[in-house]
Length: 403
Ligand code: ZN
Picture 1 (cartoon, rainbow, N blue to C red):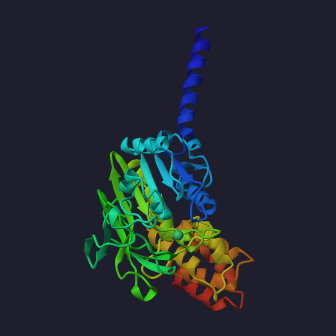
Picture 2: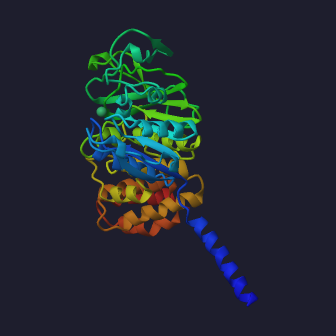
Picture 3: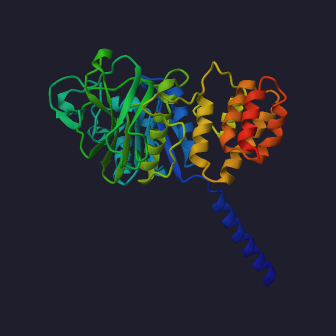
C-alpha cells in the first residue's frame, strides 16, 4: 500500500517537472483591433506572427465591434496579459473598458502603440498621456506641443497648428537618439527603413517620454525638414509603453512591415513593455545605413534557407543570400570546429546536382580560405567539370599547399 502511494507521488512529481518544461513562452500578448483607417485584417495577424516567432509570446487577437457598433460589448480582460498591442483607430471604447485599461497600465501592464494607434482617442486624456504624441483626430495646440529634433537638440514647439501629417511614402533613414535603452542597445546608429509613411508634426503632452529614434522628413519629398520622432517609450503609472510610428500596412503587409528594422524594434519594444528588459539577439539581416532589409515572409532566414537559395544562385540576381552566409561565417566561425559546421553544409551545395555552377563557384571561393580536408574529395570531383575546373584547382591549392 505504502509503495503504491510513493509511486503516485513520484509520478505526480514527474508530471509537475514535465509541465514546467512544457512552458515554452513567458509572456501573453493581446492585440486589440477591429477598426482602423488601415487594413487591420492584414496587420493584426502579422503582428501576432511577429510576437510569437520570438518564442517569448503567445498572442491573442481581440476585435471590437465594427464602426458604429455597440462598444459596451467590448470588455477584454486586460489583466490576463503582460502586454497589450493597440492596432486600433476607431470608435471610443466604453467608460468601463477605458477605466479597466488605465487600471491595467497603472498596475504595471505593458502597452505597444503601433502606427495609426497614435491617431486614435483624441478625447481620452489618459490615452494621450500614454501615447506621448499623436496626430490627426483634430489634434492641435490644445493637445500639447509639437516635439521633434533640430540637429542634436530636442525641440518642444508650442506653435499653433494641426497635429499629424506625412509626406509621400518613401524609404528613409532612422537615426538612434538613445542607443543605451534596452530596446535599441546594439542596433546600428543609422539604418534605412523600408518604404513607409514618415509620421510628422505629431503633438501631445509628451510627459515621461523618451525619444529612442527619429527620422529626417526631407523637404524635397514634401516633408517638414525636421527630425521627427518615430520610436518612443513612455511611462504611465507603473506601466511601460513602447510607441512605434512605423509600419504602414498594405494588403499583404508590404515593405514597411516587412522591414527588418520595423520587425525587430517592434519585437524588442514588446518584450521591453512586457518585462522591462530585452533578451532578443539582433539578427544578421538587420539593415544598416547602406540600404533597407526586407523579409518577404516575415521570417528571419536560417542558415539552411540561405544555402538553399544559394544553391539556386543566379549571378544576375541579388547576392543577398551569399552576403548573409558570409556574415554568419564572420560572426560565428571563430573556431575550426565552428567553421567545420559551415563547411559541412557548404559541401552539400557542392554535392547537389541541381545547384548552379555560379553557386558552386561562390562556395568554392569561400572554402578556399575556410575549408579543410573534409572538402577535398568533392572539390577533386568538381575539378573534372570544365566550367569549374579553374576555381576548383585554385581552391585545392589553397587547401593542400604543395609539400
Ligand atoms: Zn499608415
